[in-house]
Length: 152
Image 1 (tube, rainbow, N blue to C red):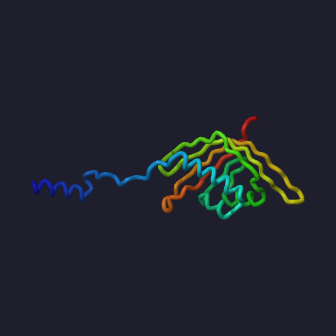
Image 2 (cartoon, rainbow, N blue to C red; image 1 turned 135 degrees about the vertical axis):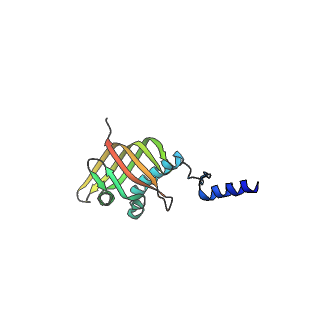
Image 3 (tube, one colour; image 1 turned 60 degrees about the horizontal axis):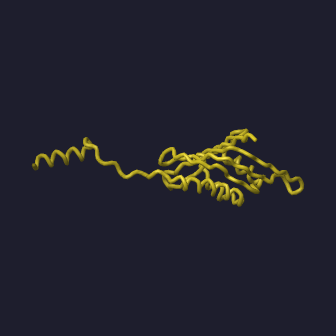
């Protein structure tokens, strides 16, 4: 019996016998991902650029008529204020424990230009945002966002 215990202990110590894996990160709840998307749009409408920047990964890309990095998006948001938005038909797909995406229809209005020459931009798009959980902080950040004009 003593020999058997010694063999089992030796096998466990050497890793030859599979040990139970450590508890893994649970899958995110869809409602939590919905809240992330809603918070992103609300924060953009509030115009706090530090807060907006903190919601995106450093390697974030926006794909619409162009492919843009985060800095380009932030410059655009400084010149165009999000006046209103409505997220419709929002769907969530959980990809992994640390990634998810939202797909939805968004109708929004931006006020661009200057006080002397204001320009109103009305948009009607289908959008997808990819959310990733950061390994060190556990925070969820947007890594990719796409916008495609919706058909009338």
